[in-house]
Image (tube, rainbow, N blue to C red):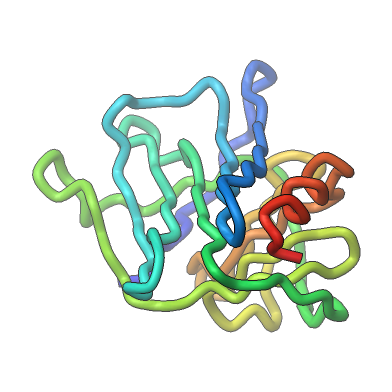
Amino acid sequence: MALKILGIEKKPSDVTINRVFEAMGDNLLLVTLEVLPLGSNSPHHWFLENNKKPPFDIAINPQNSVLNYIKFFFQDEKLSRKNNTLTCVNSQNGLPIFDISNYSEKVYQRFEVGDVEAYIADNCLFLISGDAYNCSRIYMDEKNALLVDCNGTYIGLMLGSLSEEEFNELAVAKIL
C-alpha cells in the first residue's frame, strides 16, 4: 500500500513552497513543508508511523491529487551528519501528483508502519523511509525535493540549503 506518484504537474507561478522548522522544547521539533496556497480543507492523509511518536504525515489535496503539506516530528532523537549516500539517477521539476484511487470521502487516511531515517549531508536534511539508492528527485522548488524509487513510490524528502535560522531551531530543540 505504498504511496505512489502518478506524474508531475508544472508548478503554477502563484504557488510557493513554505518550509518551517519549529522547536517545541527539548528533543522536540516539528518540520513542516507546505504548498501554498493550501488546497482542500479536508485533505487525504498518508501516515507512516512507528508507535513511538506522531506519524510522518503527507496531506494530499483530493481535488487535484497534489501535495498540500508534509509534517514530521523529531522526538527524543538526534540527527547525524554523514556523507550523502543517495544515488539519484534523474531529477524533474514540478509538483508530484499522487495516486489517490484508494481514498474516498469515507477513507481519507492510510496508515503504514515504518521508520524515517533522518540525517544531514551537504547542507541538506534528508528524511528517508525507503531504499533510497537509484532514486529520482522531484524538485518542488530550488530547495525541496521529493524522492521516489524507480517504480514511482515515495521514499523520502530532501530539504536543501538549510538556513542559519533552521540550524538554530535544530540546536534549540537539541536535535543536532
